Image (tube, rainbow, N blue to C red; front, side):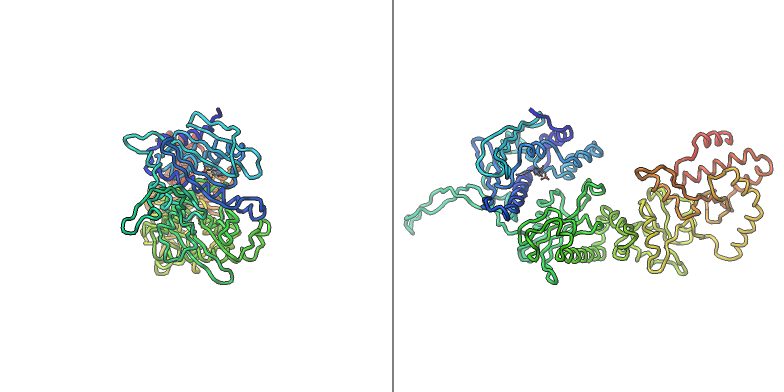
Length: 624
Ligand code: ADP
């Protein structure tokens, strides 16, 4: 007996003891695996004529033995594949499982992972998988009765493909597993979840039929066993648009992309033009667990006249729309298109362009007409769009800038850049932003107070990439981006400016002394009239802002050496200034300690770690 990998075991355990309300989805999962396997063999059959191309999926019920069997004549699995595919959950899945799921509840977990084959353990206490792979001369059988492990052994099997035999669990007070052995139940589940599957799903059914030769006025009936195809087999995108409901699309999406949640939006389009194709596009309601990792593979499923030729055609989606899932079916493609020629294929390029335009227009429409949906989408995938703006030195920024949203201090929700600019104050010439780790921290920044008091709207930059986005955009509608720490909100008149200058002049020596005390921790120490209640703040004096310093230093491989030039600003109105003045005249040692404490305080307000905790604590306790 072989052991499941530890993490697979945990997921398995979860399935076995599942109280997941939607147990019936196991059937959809097994059927869609069967259909995928047939897709693969069908593709091969285009060039290998020896393959039996009478493709089908067969369901067999055996009430006496309590077994439900799902069989396909697809590509099958070798012994090694049985072991690899059924003995472990995909590597990336286990990784995510380890990291974040200790406290997640079961429904969320099942929802998040799309546990495919393993979902059969929700209804079965024993599973046998017989399989013969294309090109293999032997068949193998994988058996498992749960977490204890599984076995793989040689077996006899006619023909290519896979047969999954489930021995259903015993009925309990809460759940009647034997329902899954009933003809009507299976028929209706197939109709509900798998109707569009392009291969016949057949099952033996009993029908009541008129006895041959029985008289018209006194017809007699008999029970006849027949094999029936349960699904309509028409792919959703081959149906007339008017016959396709949103629910059909959602069902198709969940089936095809192994997601357990409805997409935020489904789009069904038939495009005619320089290239002609049908497409179904889906905006998922949440990012897959590996979305922001290098494991994630974008792409649309590519069909040529109903035959799947590629699982994930990445050429069809730009990176920044990589979250979109869907299918493209075009008769204009060549059936034996390979990965190599795909990249240069004119048709594929034309479809990709057209798809990008379609996605853009759908997003625009969503923003205008279904704002809440767009906000949900942006919460999940906004980062991808931001990276898209930034990537390639901003080559796509103009296409994407109107999809950006940032949190507004004034409206207290996400706003677009256009909305910001439309709401600018009389005479305001810049788009103001403030950066920090979280909205709360940004709202507490000293520099914000004055700006808010003056009625300015401030965009909160919470993601590391935000400032880079602003730098690469440079401006929106002619309005430059400006950090609140660089802006001067307090000074309305030249007289005020003059006053600050005079005060700075008169305190020149004090400021120089503090700069001296702090050494190269700061580039400059100066007075400001930007602050309201806080005594000090730290701003950057160069191209690299403090927030960017944080981002750079948190990148993998960073040596932590990127430093923003920092300016310590002291409030010209704060009473601390008097204390500092007195100390300057009476106790320079103590002034140094004050300088240190104020500097470290300013770092904390910026969300930076203390420069030197030991030095800070000792200076602080000396003062107290
Ligand atoms: P998923 O289908 O999401 O990849 P599953 O756990 O359902 O995850 O299946 C794991 C893998 O096992 C599949 O990717 C496929 O390679 C293989 N597999 C499952 N069922 C079949 C089948 N009926 N025929 C061939 N291969 C299969």
